Length: 129
Image 1 (cartoon, rainbow, N blue to C red):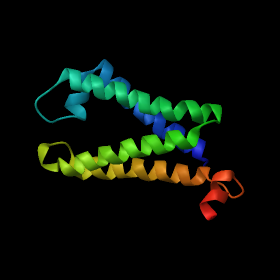
Image 2: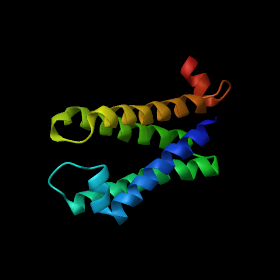
Image 3: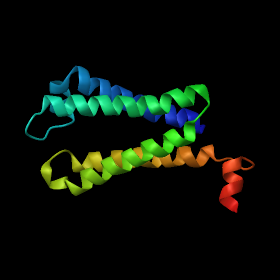
């Protein structure tokens, strides 16, 4: 598996979940965001940003350009999302599945970034200095 493929898979997850939150916030809330109170606008915002994060990965993966910065940006957003779930564990959600799944997404993004740094590339040479 290449870093581009891994980035594309994570990107598809973000786009699919984002579009779901945008198109069907009630269904998304009933299955994923099960905490109260229901807030349609917050789910629309979440959907918009998730879709954008996904496209930030899919587009450079498809074009073979600019993938590393996208991986770093989406990894940071994903780590902050994981932190928010840990910090807000008492407020709802599905801690036994949410936290491991979000951790898996972070690990996949970190792995994709590591895979994108190949020996002999400028980034790899600078990392050795």
